[in-house]
Image (cartoon, helix red, strand yellow):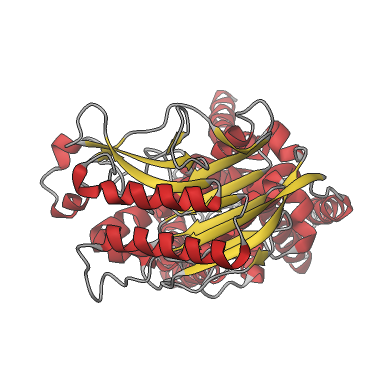
Length: 534
């Protein structure tokens, strides 16, 4: 049979299977959205991959009666993953419409859906094999790893692993293999179990269901028997986190918002110090000092931050600075460490290492200046040069992540390990005001919760407009604030004294998955080449 031959079916049957595949794809996308806030149903994550595999199979993919090359080339096979991606990511990141408009939101959703299509193209030739569920899960993890890098700096939002931060039996997996490992387990368990049951129901004789079911049982046993806990602690810090934005800018724009917000943070900090004494460390969020205080028009912002630092002892605050070479075109998104004297020493500035494309800088700006929406990004943020941590107290280091850097565990890992001693606490400072009263703050907080599990550190999640919170090494949230309120939360935060396995070795599961994503198509091409020679 030629590669382009397809088993003949009545036209009505093809239409029915195509419609059934699209229906399953819509359900898969809906489950992806339901697994994350605002619905936040962890069990929904376990049906995403099986529904998507079933949708692809209904469209003709993975049918052992058809030549594998012909099956993967059929457009109908690639339509279900595209639809699932559009539905799932479209709903999950709908909060992006407010700051980026329909065009920006639509382009990003289309890119994420395209990764689902790429996943299907890689796995379809292998779906009918007993090892299929293992490859489906491995390539899924590889897809997540690669979409966290490409295009530009990537966007790993809505990874299935983030939906499992409340599932205690997966916490050891997160400490060993990170979010990628949790995603792998979720996909493998669900796909292998469903695949095995379907094979049994079909009474399959040639390819018995033992392999898929064995994969599901083996992974379940391996995961539940791992008992890696968080690292031991050595000392603690009295940490005050302050949230200062009560301005709903889309309702009542305030041209003096940067000044108002810094004043709110200053007043709330001094009030907390008066009532409870000076803490060891005070944390202000991203954009707390949102104009360069070295400029005469905004020097009062620097005065307020310095006063807060002197009153509270030590302050880490988000800051926006003009670029050193071309202030009209460049800026710095960073975090300042202000000591008890109210000033920053040399090296006490962390510059965001991975600015957000089209949010903080415009790639190929000279070719895209005609797009009106990009007027909101008049200057390009400069990327930070290297990993860094702050010494916030004698012998005590803290690592900092800014905004969407929480998506990238490699940044957290290298910042924690940047100093002479690993940082004992992680500070995740963010703005989030542009996303209004949406699910984005809760989804963002889930990323900090996963980082706490991966690194074994307390995470201070300080958001300008909320929700701010403390997160313990078991991913539990403490003292969460409401959105768009001025608030101060305070807690004695234990300091981690050692690394987790994930912090030691990094995201090996993601790297292996990315390798599998690249190698499986090569293996398929070699197989087809051998078949032609025979």
